[in-house]
Image 1 (spheres, rainbow, N blue to C red):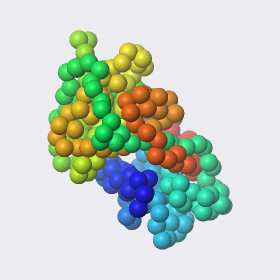
Image 2: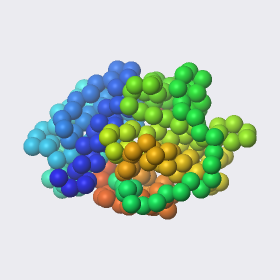
Image 3: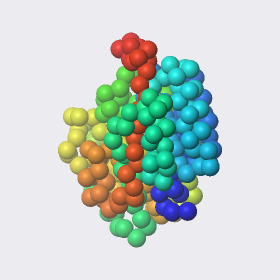
Image 4: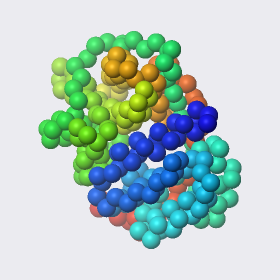
Length: 261
């Protein structure tokens, strides 16, 4: 098993932890593939990850059929090991290629020193969970209610998703979530509202969180970056493992509902 395949397996587990409590959740999983559908008419909350699997084409076909039955858009991320094989299947099913998600890793031997120490607290309990939700909604421009229903519900002691908030003198600045599995941890939902961007607070939070997890025995970190976030992660020592093709299934009825969400 190469590193990309291993990390995709961890991404499957992380997505299950993040989505398991969302309203209307429907999860279908194999070792290397996962479909997660919710009641939300937004592609970000209806996800498909496709890794090497003996029946990966069948998994894709069944997933798209189920998304269409529920009138949900779908965001599909493919391993490079299966992308070429799946591309004609995805096109036939009505999906559109929309780009790639850089899969990046920070290896154990890469030093990361916190750029500056900040007050960081874990988001547990209604008040702090709400603060993290406010930051995520502001950073990604998503409806506040969707964040509460689909993301805040996973911020519990036992969900496997650990969310942290960085505070400055004027209040909360940014947040990040971590999904640890053994000595490897996934980084997700790195969220800094526009008014706090380009001030180094995201870098400070992430570097301090990584340092703290390393002290607790986590050696390696992985994440799916956006092109906008890629320079930050590269500057911290994250390396590109693979560009994962991303495909979208749109649903006209779901699109019409977005304005009311």
